Every structure is written in structure tokens, then in C-alpha cells.
Image (tube, rainbow, N blue to C red; front, top):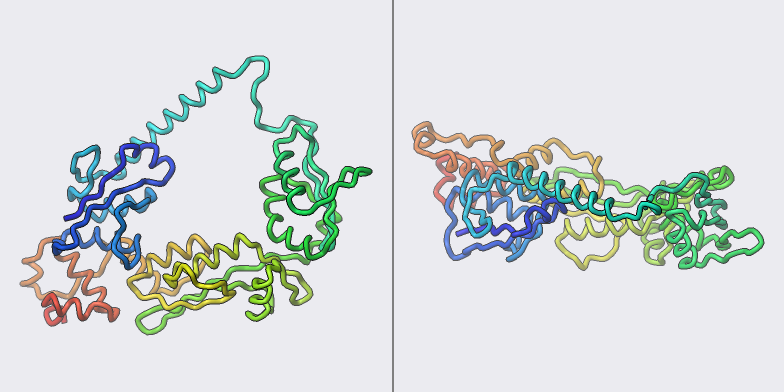
Length: 377
């Protein structure tokens, strides 16, 4: 009824944390109760639609499927249908991958010419990228040509309107709008990737430049949750933020400060809003509230963790997420003792899942259809 075909290059795929899995699912056959936990995990990963033929899974997602299968032979490895041991096999594959990488490094080391060893670290005495300026202009002095970041720094200034001043060898950007847009888009890159050295003058005259924040708010809404994802730039309202985004102005002035709207972070916000809404064509909005049903809590939590790892959720959200991520933690359904003794463990798990849905107003129709509604009540 269900087969999950593992790739032949599982070792390499696990090392990349991207495992391609082929899904063979016969939708014309009613699934047996013991497969319900596996199908529930698949639905959470894929969303409300039926799973596609091919899935790219992380190792954590693959482990969830293996845990939900509980020893059932639903995985196919090298043509063999097996009850997959996720943790053991991944540990073995990781060890093999490490051995392969170590051998490759040793081979590369042995092939290097002895007279010209490759040294990726910057030799001592090289000048780093130096950043000077204010909100009105930027003056960048490129690092030494031998510096590891020289080529990237040169491409950056040439591609963003900087002009070289031959007398002092500085690359200048003399325009307030361009300067603020550049800092919003590339300020973090100057510090982290290019390892720039910022002058005291720059730090003094840009202290009022702050990054806009992404805020997450989750509130109970009946049997659902209202999830709000928004940009916050001081006291600026949504109209001001919307105007800045609509005109590709990556900054906003409020409260005597200038808030930088990093395009990369804005793109992450929009992607998360679209994922929660299930609408890949939704427009850009600085604030959007989406109703999330209880059965989508675990899926929504993965989206929010990628966007804002420190987000705060109410207790009801956390309880339902834990139940969906680990079906074995569900509260047992209050069954009559006689009926409970007749059920097998996987059947009790299925009934607990139906009880969990019914408790939150989502499973009454399903439970009644299976003849369980009145029994549980």
C-alpha cells in the first residue's frame, strides 16, 4: 500500500542533509491503522495535498518517518523491503562519508607541490577591507590583492556604482539613497563574509542605523490560531512600510532613527507568509495574519523556526505541536476497559489520534464515520 524507496547514494545524500525518496502510494486502498502515523507525518511534510512521487527530505524528516513506521517494512533499500533503522544506518553512513572526505583531503594534500603549499588563511601583514563613511556616503579601501576577499570586494564595488578615486585609492559611493540601500542589502556581508574593518568615524555616524525586526505573534482563535508575521521598524506603521517596499526603498526613517529593510530578510518573511497561507503568489505585505488549524501546527512551527527561531507560542500551540511531532505522546482516549483490552498498540494510537482531533473540534465527523464517536464519548 505504501513504499518509500531510498536512493542508492544514500550516504552522500545524508551527508548533504537532502535525501531524495520515491513515494509509491496506492490511494485506491484504505490504509490499515498501523500506517496512519506514517501517513500523518507525510501529510505534515507535504501539506494538505497528496504526496508527490519524489520528495527531498532532511535527515530529521526521514527519521520521523522511520519512527512513525515502528518497524514496519515500508522502506525499500537497494531493492529490499526493510523495516528501516534510521539512527543506526545514518550513523554508519555518516562514518563512511567522513572517511571518504578524509581520504579526499589526504589525496589533495599529497598532490600539492611542496614548494608552493596552498594556504587559504590570509598571510600576516595583509590589509583588510576598510569601510568608512556615514548615511550620506561610503568610502571603501579594498584589501590587499593577495587577501582572500579581494576579488569579491572588487566585484561588489564595481557592481554597485562605486567610483575609484585614484588619488587615495578609495572606492566612493556619494549618494544618500544608494548608500542606505547598499548598507541594507550588503552591510552584513561587509562584516561577515568580507571581514571588513569599520572605522571609528563610520561607527559613530551610523550608530542610528538599525535593522528592521521580524516579529511573530500567535494567538488562540477558537479551535485555531491566528499567526501574525510582520516587519517592525520603530513606530512606523504598515502604510509607511508598504510604501518603502513598493518603491524598492530598503530603509525607513522613524523616531529619529533609520531602519534598514534587508531585502534578504524581507524575502524570507514573504516566503513564510506565503507558505502559511498556502498561496505562492500572495503579494508582499509588511504584516499578514493567517488562521492556522490545529492539524497544521507542526508544519507551521517549522516555517516559523526557520524565520524566527526565538518566537514565543502559547501553551496550547506547544502541546499540539508536540502531539503532532511525536504521536506516541498523545493522551490515550478514554475508552471503556473492555474495548481497550481488545485493541492492539497501534490501534490505541489511532484511536488516541482521533480523540486528539475530536477534542479540538477537528475529528468529530471522522470519528463518527468510523463508529468511534459515541464510544469515546
